[in-house]
Image 1 (spheres, rainbow, N blue to C red):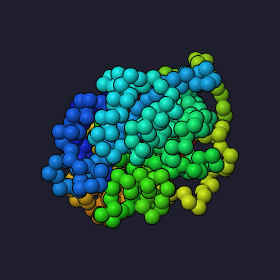
Image 2: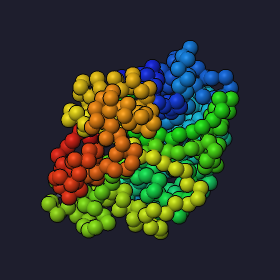
Image 3: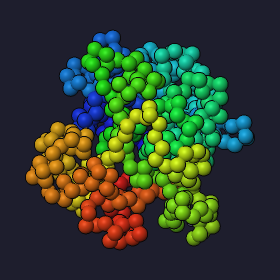
Length: 412
Ligand SMILES: [Zn+2]
Ligand SMILES: [Zn+2]
């Protein structure tokens, strides 16, 4: 469900190469059809417990991962729905986990496996299957499905995972929050903050990423897990972040009425247009749980950088929808000139970018690198909109950018 038909192992590898991704999760490993695709196409690389496409020499590696959704009733009597990421070292473990979880849900009904069990039960089962597993909550702040989300989550990971919280060492900040926001909550200091991407549509790969550094011989499942578990800055160098304001649950709001509210300014709880309850966004939720002011950074925090996906930047600069041929053509031209999307966004020389595309493109990328973007924040399931050029600053609405949709961003 909700998965592009272009998603094959081969398609993922090609897209990863364009983006500059060297290690990616297989995702959805509990779904039998996808597991067959994985088994038919992947082979382990030596003893690393990482995988590559059979016979491939691109250097792109896969790790066995899956996202599951646990639905259960909390001790407070309220319905809870939480998404988790599971990482495993071997296909055998994946199969054992399938057998172990079969009685909790229809494993093949969705790639993001729905399970009728508590978060604690899930973690217990996973570690019974393989002690070397790694589990953490996905997009921890989203109102629906986030372990700390306003609608179906908890106020702490200890509440969410109960006695199994001892196995939780990381969390995924999700698109609508970034490390800076999470660092405002001292109770989260013990967890490593990770940033991952959806893999159900190829252009969405790499909207967020984790940047690791390993010697070739040490590049293994175990070393990746250890780097995360230990928040080891020698190997986990930084996270690459989507601007959280662009995420679709940053502000509070009501989608149908197009109403959004900045929770730090005024805090209505109902929509002033129709009177329905607002969807409480991530910023509001973090403000409620935070015990530190914005800007606090502990010494062991992993650095982060913010990016805007290149197709969005091109779309903005040439004023064409992000999914159009015109954008794709420019994207492919830039990739063939500079290497990968991450190279272009973070490293390529701006004068070279101006020469290869346009002055506006170079200015937009410079503004992204320098955190000088204007953003109309997302809310209630609607993505935020970014403004990237200096001459568009302060021109239209109070946030400095046009209210109407600037990009053909899929809203689902
Ligand atoms: Zn999810
Ligand atoms: Zn409304």
